Length: 497
Ligand code: NDP
Image (cartoon, rainbow, N blue to C red):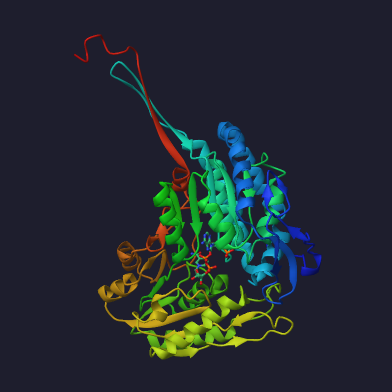
């Protein structure tokens, strides 16, 4: 992968992407909204403005497809998921270009996104084959058996930052476990997902995956409110996550939530500073800074702080800002004006609370892409308890804060409402592992940020969410266990007297 010969001019969009129901794109009941190129503002296509009527059709299609899909042999489901991975791989270069245009993110980053997404389908194609090893044993006067069963129709809502990773994280375990799905992609980034949906229709039985594009408070709300769904899965902000958790609580539905993050990245004094700066820069700028896993709270040991920060600034100056679809670009356009303004507002908040912007902090213009919000890599010296070091910014910015004692840095690292990811850089693995053990986060990467390994559980502590994805644990989140106990005889007469 990564030899993208496709240019934006090669991409042909459909005029309209209504909901995908029963394997076909159909007319949207409530009309359409525009999908625009994040950096140029050009209208790329129209997407359905999903609402109750579309959601109802999609849920009905998923419900009708459910019994056959649930009863499909796991070997056959596994084979189909491998085929989904093949189809995604075959179409990856085109989909990456679509996603880059739609989200504004730099095209080269999508090599990682699509590698992770393809692995997801292959991983769950394999994992499901060993998931059904329920228990079976003789008990007094009979036999006991346990088995895993799917949940039914799953409602899945994903955000705009990494659309194909999110689609794969949600679909692969749900389908592997035998569920059918209604997926709502984010209104700002659904074109690659809808195109993928069309490809899925060539591989999966009709109705197994349905998609309803549209606004969160319309299509999303209608989906979580639909009376005939059996599971809620969401990735996005803590605010909407709470709403979905509340709905799940009221309706006694199982729920998986992957919410925000504000990851500490701890730098010990024993590191080679140049390589640590490189890893730190990757850790706060990748995904355009728009990700919940970024290492945006750099906690740097006092002994090397000045040199580290100086080199971090020099490195930031060299990060190439440019058009999203240019392969040499490393930082491109934020998804939309609202999010761009939100990031810039955070820099004002930082200034007001006494933090110091050491580098960056500005929007820059890229010729031909004046619509886009391109924001400089931004380094802010801050106290660990300031808002800028506590709240999710979702832009290419990191705070730097000094520490001198291990207990102090562990406290700083954990003193935040989130707990999704963390990084540690040290040449002393004993330090690294001992600190990793004390960090309240679902993933801790020592010396190499974003070190995703297939099958490793991914999810959050604290306000970063509930449940784990990317791993076998996700199959459990999309299954329920049944115990069957068979007695050889009924109790003898008189047992109840
Ligand atoms: P949201 O949480 O609003 O959006 C995530 C998804 O939920 C989207 O598909 C959205 O639809 C949908 N949604 C919104 N409201 C509802 C609702 N009432 N019922 C059901 N679904 C709903 O995130 P934002 O896009 O507003 O981003 C705001 C902030 O959230 C970011 O700055 C960032 O801090 C955080 N975030 C975290 C992410 C993560 O990966 N953990 C990902 C994205 C954002 P639609 O967008 O179509 O309106």
